Length: 350
Image 1: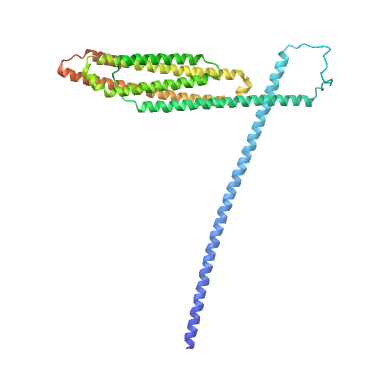
Image 2: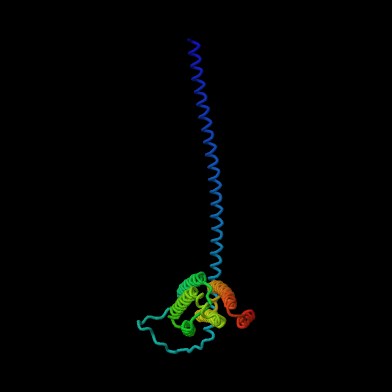
């Protein structure tokens, strides 16, 4: 009985020792994990301190650069004012009248001159900032118009299908629409007032609507193309030549319209920049805006090239379709292929 009691006591002691050892092991693991987390936090704090120090040095560098630019602007403005004073003819007035309030005018000291110069700089900077805000708003509106033009042109080109025939009445209506587009372009070139931007955007939207309706009309004609080819197989080369001439005229008009729009934008930008001094032009952000406009112009040129590529594909599809129709007609009537060969030769030369 005594041995059993000793055995049970030894088992309890062993279990207690194993529990203590397990607890000690868990505490050691927890300490290691806490040490690792502390090390990672220290590394992160060190990284953040490096980032803060680098940003502080960058900020100080930018502040010094801005101060140098401000001093340069002040020197240029002083130089311009001195040049104007030297060039301006002055009249010396003797026996000047006193002030209405009876007070004597202040002496021209360094403080008063500095005060007047500071007010002058403030007014100039205020006018310059207001001018910059107006230019930024105008550029934002022009970017919106260009983005809308891009979206609508992409939608038109994606929904475009190859078509061949066209009615004479539709040709008359399209020519009227093209004349209206040319007139609106001429009117937009002649505008230099405050409402020129609104008229330009309205003209662009009107032209896009007309182009969209024209493309939809051409797409609707595609479904009736087979029956028209069967009825008028002899007039297929003439109809395709009319369509080709019409598409070339539309491409030229679009090119002229884009060139006139660019010319108008350049005139507006030059007119706005001429009002500012040559010193302000060197430090303003108009060069960045011009680069953005050049990039947008490059994108428009790429879209124009893709449009011409689509037009060529359309003409080739029209020629293939006309050849198939003529082959079918020749299987019934005979081999009149002279007109089609001449038209293909003319297209290859073009």
